[in-house]
Image (cartoon, rainbow, N blue to C red; front, side, top):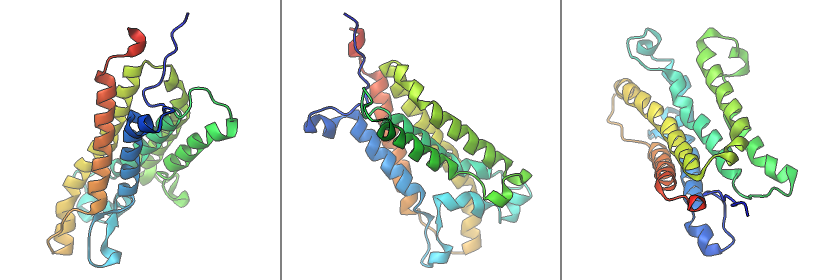
Length: 226
């Protein structure tokens, strides 16, 4: 008889299994990453001076050092958490059931992920602006990968785990790197000591959970191969 391959991220029927499954850990990490991205990364007592992760790409362009190329900040890389989260959302929620029964229900996660990827698009009046070309390309790549995530069902268990881990790294590292480069400029502008926003901490923690979950799945024995 053919061996049925079960996804490592599929929800088990037992409530105990759901609570302790890789899917639950990944879902928690994904929620933290998304919430953290839209929460403060640059904290300030004044709400108008607080900058969220989702605002950093636009915020960075107002610095003369960034505009002149003195500070090697690539604004588009602040959007990698959003694009990676969109792909991960579609990838993980595609594993909710092994046998789709309702077409609308099973397509809704992909639609939600596609909308999340589209949120990375520049403002419509700047879609063709050369200064936003990188942002447009990144959003388009994210949308294409979201639409291709159903193909991941065919991947072996370990490959799925490795894919989650790679997406977690791709979501966190580029944005963190750019934040490290931009932060001294922000501190100099505000002229006060600045801590780390809770959104940054939550976003990094979320991607760290996703990375750990992906690595554990990729490193664990594949039962279907025994």
